[in-house]
Image 1: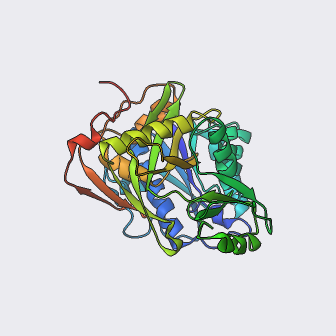
Image 2: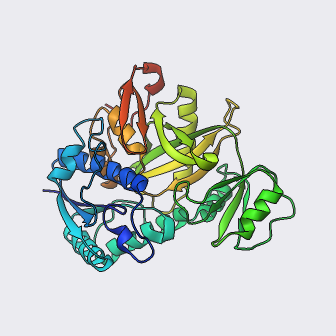
Length: 372
């Protein structure tokens, strides 16, 4: 039987480390939703799933997030998994390395913040395990928002014009506003600010505690595309619209799919071009982008690449006509993943709750990862 170690940072003990404190409820719900959905799909394909759980959490999934629409109830994944509780950072590290060495493959879901994702991917490598995800070089690159943007720019992929700003650093003499300021090693909307003018940017720069990126703000539709990667190629999944809001307007609230056909194809093509610039893309990666108003796509830009599973997995599995984890494993094993999507509208929130709506065949036509 295939044995997979599925590690999710927030629920799996990552916050036991020094300086992390107590897991915020929003991050815990989001992490639990991703882990529960993927665990359910892995169990459904016959895999034995091993997981870690922060001993301070009474329940792995907060009430109300156990059920995720899709092929098979997500609540079954956690109950069927072998869950090991950890009470300290040392216990987490020891258990992690033991499971990474013992299992056939490891999937790491963790934020780029504080090098958490890269550090645990390195743990897999040090334990002699198999990482079912991007190469360490890719994770290191994609974890740094400025380094990623520069890599994409040099490769001809459109990104917002931007620059590096050090703590208490000086802004460039000329810069077009409005702009966005964000930490290079941030995760999600953590520390992201909209800066309307130079005065706001100077105040932002004066308060920085870490190296950050200042980039031009691009109006348009916030979208994301998950890409399954392996030696057989790069396979974009159904593009999603992102729903952002909250203080500052950049907090991730969830999303919906599919996009209108023209927008979806623009997003998918740009996502594949982006992922292709990485050294050793493997597994599931998410690309965040903004689609401009021009139907030609001339104003579209890539915002960042997430070298890990993203929350959109819960929405994609609800629309997929087959097991999404099976497609992920196929990609990692050098096979063309055979997956298409049902003509259904899916709305999902950051907690993993999904709502299915009226079908629209035209919007999903042609989005399949393999023939047949």
